[in-house]
Length: 329
Image (cartoon, rainbow, N blue to C red):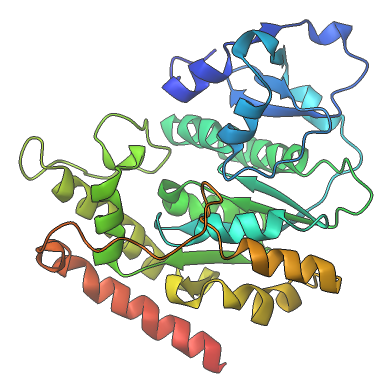
């Protein structure tokens, strides 16, 4: 096992371990941790990934001692026959409606939705620490294929929402998946910062994420200045999106949720019954992360958000220009 192990990976590996030789197949098993010479899997059986995040579905499996995991070589990734190719990868800046999008899609039985699967983050940290390019491309393709294993007859589409800091790895994803649509979801920087001020995401706290991203300077302007760190991180997200704009389909938070049934279902060729569409629209009126009735975001905690985010607005405005240009095209 590589020494690049995150807190999340350690938590995933607190489970009842069984030998892979005891298994008839890996159907219903999903990779969660990537090591130097193999990978760890966790058993989900027929449990659907309907929670806001992959780790929430893990939590639904029960206490650590009740969850099953096993370890295999990378060869085990080639044992799956019934898998779906990805319909789209979802990149985002965080706190921008991406979880709502995945929750709406996961409400449809036609869709497999993986929301920030840990296997991809685990793989990317090892990739950026140093990995043969050809082997990395093969491994990423295999991991995504196993995430798309088809367990139910009605499943036709696979959507994978990546972690926000994965935007810098877009060139690798494009090399491996040259024809797959890449969505990029974003929001006014001031509103994203306000959301993180209310409850900091782990990527916005120094040291909590062993970031799976290319080398980037995230030095604080002052020790303990979490807003400065957040703005720096958001700058990385927005600037990367501008850099890779030719590869991205842009969605602004303000377009949610109506863009899902007005445009995206048709774009991805997803047909729904009247009952399914009604259920999807009903789900859109509830909070993406806790399913309570959504009444809008709280008012910003304090003034000064705009000043803190001033450096981000040129990139944000560039994304808006690109989005509007795409909509006219």
